[in-house]
Length: 378
View 1 (tube, one colour):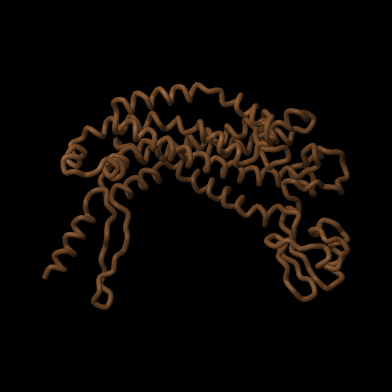
View 2 (view 1 turned 30 degrees about the vertical axis):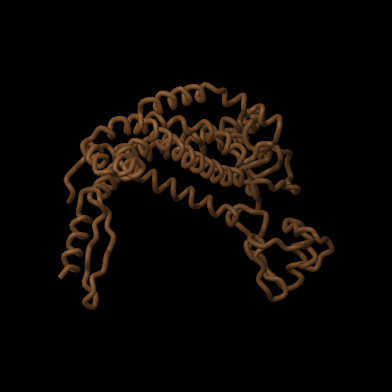
């Protein structure tokens, strides 16, 4: 008789506000659990969908970003697959030398070389190329116009001043910017929430000393540190990400600290503390969920700022190494080559569309988590 009572208590606990619903369904005499979102999560999703601009912007952004994740299969100077001597070869995943194809050099095969293509075709093989037969760093040696070349059937958006395909650089640059922004936002948010939670929950001397450290750290000149770094080592993706994380976490400290200062005085927090619950458990289970709402509404705008920051640093020449798939470098080339307007226009339009979509998504997220928009659950 104890097991049905225990089961009933578990179901009653799962029905509490904010907890995921657990539905049971009889299958051959045994109950089966099926996870459902909690009523508050469904309400937030419904509020998000009601924000039409944000909802459709999310799907457009996911479609664009998902497409760029397959950049190697869309824009590449390496075939997707080819047949040679009755076997299938996948050069996108595996590197093959020219000797393996019957050539003379032991270096990786250059598939843009007509000699390598003839080696494959003479063996009765075939080649499946990407839609764009240029990667972001492929120099077109057979271009018939001086670089930067205008748009043509060979290069739909023209080339930059290094005879590299502009459309391929846009695809790879979009992916790089979003991935960098997501990584920087996630790491900065984690550190900022942790620091703000510690200050806000304990208060007193911890909060006082923490605020002084944050103010001093916030006053450090980030651009000068980047210039010094660029003079010592060649900045790459991870160097730049690590350095910017050291300063970007500050933006979420104030929001999280304010929420913890307010929530720590609520009755349920005092009751948990009186029952002997540890500080870490109270912070994680009782206070952090309330503070997370404020942090999440700020996160999309932090992502916007991270992408803009990377673009600005690349434009100034203190970001990623030259030749990287960067929207900022493309804008810099457009500034340096006024006679080639396709460079600046394509870079600006791509960046503007990306940031506009993220802004609409951020506004929809803010509306979804706004408690004033609470509606009855259907």
